[in-house]
Each structure stands twice: as structure tokens, then as C-alpha cells.
Image: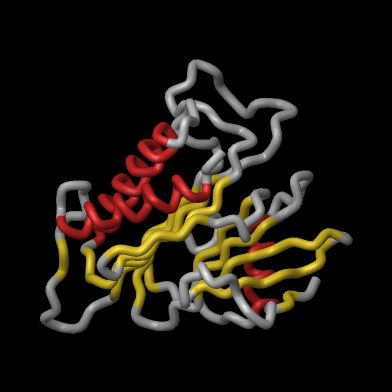
Length: 225
């Protein structure tokens, strides 16, 4: 299981994101790696590095459609080590082709989205449990903001990103609110003593509105039919 860094990235790739490939169980798989470095606080629902805390990198790794490992956190940690990153970070995974990601940027806010819609539906569904035999699918959202957010604002940002995701899916013609395994990671600056800390990240706040628009654009690009 070895990562290979391509000699060049697509012209549309945002500067902080590195495209990696590996061969695993005879299958060629891809990953996107953001080496954020020190000075970032992240909130995430990811299985590796979830919650709120300082994180130095984000790895969005593709896995096979027949993925059966029951220790995804350990698997992601192994992949991160193979990629050469150390310390605390966030690891997400998806069966979708991560090279077909959507990217948007506005006033320093960046969003990167990978979308697999094999299993999709409405969050408030009357059915319980997973859908047997359905194809795997996940929408992973990574957002970077160049400002300092309080813990409450970070949580608010997750809600705003989720609202924007649903709006984008509907605008793209998908009759759903997402997939059962969607994940999100929002990164904001740690900040220096005395630096302004933003209390809100709702869709009508300055930075929340920018976040919503970038996520909407990135999801539309990633989930285009």
C-alpha cells in the first residue's frame, strides 16, 4: 500500500490540495490531502480526528466499493502515515472517485467536495437502518475559512454547510438531502491574542454567507449529473 504523488495536479486544483494515488488489494485508488500545517482549528464529523480541536491536515481517501474493514479510523491513520503527515488531523473516506471533486473559492473561503450518490435519500425518512444491496455513496465537504471562529460558530458553520449542501443537491436535480454517510470538516484559524473571534457562522452572517455560497458551488460541481 504505497502512495504515489503525481508529477502535476489538474489546472483546476486549488493550491493547498495534493492528489495522491495508491494501489490497495490490486485496485488503484486516489486521495486528496490538504497539508494545513499549524494554526488551524477544525470541527468535523469524521471517524478520524472528529470533534473540535487543532488539526494540521485533512485526508479524503477513496476506498473500494466493497469496503469491509471495521476499523476505518485505524485505516485512515495508516494512509495518513503513508502520505507522510504527522500529528493530529482529520481523515474522511468515500467510495466515490475523489479526483472528480468540486471546488469553489470566495473572499478567502474555499470548499472542496467529493460526491458519491449511490445511496441517497431524505434525512427524515420513515425507513430505519441501511438500505441492503445499495451502492455506496458519500458526500464529503471540506471548508477552510481565513478567520477565527468560536466553538459555537464552528458548530454553526457545520449547520450552514449542510443547509447549502441540501440546496445544491436540489438545484442539481437530485431528490434527496444527502446520503447516510455524509461527512463535513470546517477549518478556521486559531488566531492570535486580541484577534477578532467571530461569534456566528449562520447563512446571513458575513463569513457564514460566504461559506454557504462556496459549499453550494462546490457541491453543484461535484454532484452534477
